[in-house]
Image (cartoon, rainbow, N blue to C red):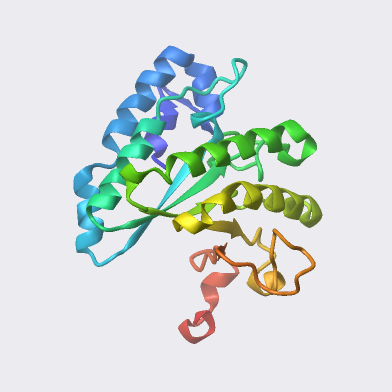
Length: 238
């Protein structure tokens, strides 16, 4: 995130929704267009490879694919996602694409595009729209032009709502992405801060299997820089 984008003419906005709502679509588009076209470049991807890294993670808000008229967001970022994946292919990097912002917000934090309540699980429309985005990403990034650079599609970043509802969504999402498993794309799911051991023997496509699913990747975020984890020793962390 680049905080300066959200400070315009002395006004601070707490999210992309608020920014676009405050500026209006035309000015918001020009502001974000400049950001999208300059924030990362081909040279950045080259430097990532030169540093010895082998993969990049690219977050995406649902509105890049599924934008309704009443929503203040603007679209235009998808072409930059496509370009980034092609650069990754050029430099032999793999890519994880994740749904960072889902309709209604999956955690109420600014990273989802809007600050406030956790409204994603409140209606089926939010699920359907997210599945539509996952379908789009799955179909797009299995195309030959990307050379298999995308190896993971994450169903949703850092959701924090009821586990049963989350697992229902994960099953639906896995059904969408799993059609690309044979093309080399894993279904990735976040542990939702329930911690990895709680997901042992989890298979979203067969909840009664008692074993880990195939073509499945668990994403966990351990924030060692923040309390209470910031006091742990290196051996404890490892």
